[in-house]
Amino acid sequence: MNDSFPIPDLDNGKDRVAVYPGTFDPITNGHIDIIKRGLHLFDRIIIVVAINAQKIPLFTLEQRCAMIRECFRGQEDRVEVGFTDGLIVEYALQRNARTIIRGLRAISDFDYEFQLALMNRRLERGVETVFLMTGFRWIYISSSGIKNAARCHGNISGLVPKHVERALREKFA
Ligand code: COA
Image (cartoon, rainbow, N blue to C red; front, side, top):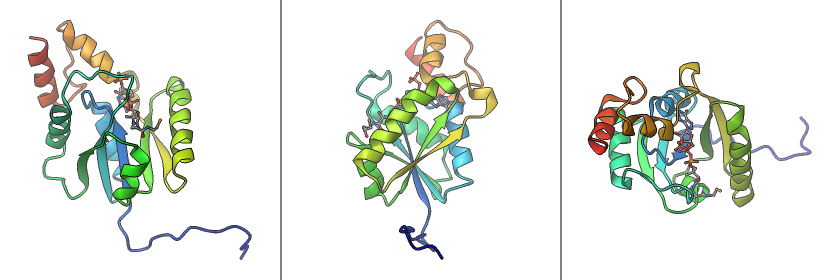
């Protein structure tokens, strides 16, 4: 066995926990697709509503968390919803998660995600970022795109869960 570099312990027997951070303003079927894919790899996923200083959300933090919780009602043993106004890597460590999940839709996501992942690694080497490819049918959607369509009373059915669709319709009534 080559012992010239340290091999991390596998934490055998412990739950494999990942965090999936984002603004989730609001959660979309594309996000849900990533979470479902992640559940094949991790015992538990903590969806973390976090702050992106560049964004002014339409929905409050409480509303965003409640909408996400509603999506996973009955699956609380596998999917949890949390929030932080601090660093995502610190939140991950506090929750014993060693992995950050991020979704990739297209090449255009890559630059931003690459920077985010490397900054997170620079902040905390004990947390790795893994990227999951979004399902083909969701690659064109974003929370902003859906909000823009809803603002003009466009048909957003099938792009977000029903309760999110209702919340958007009420916002832009
Ligand atoms: N399906 C649909 N949409 C998707 C998607 C998917 N699979 N994957 C990404 N998107 C969209 C989102 O809807 C969102 O759209 P929008 O820009 O129209 O709102 C966009 O892609 C990316 O948003 P999101 O995944 O929510 O990430 P974000 O860039 O808003 O969030 C944080 C970034 C919050 C995770 C990041 O800023 C963070 O970690 N903040 C905490 C502070 C911190 O730790 N900073 C240090 C790192 S710099």
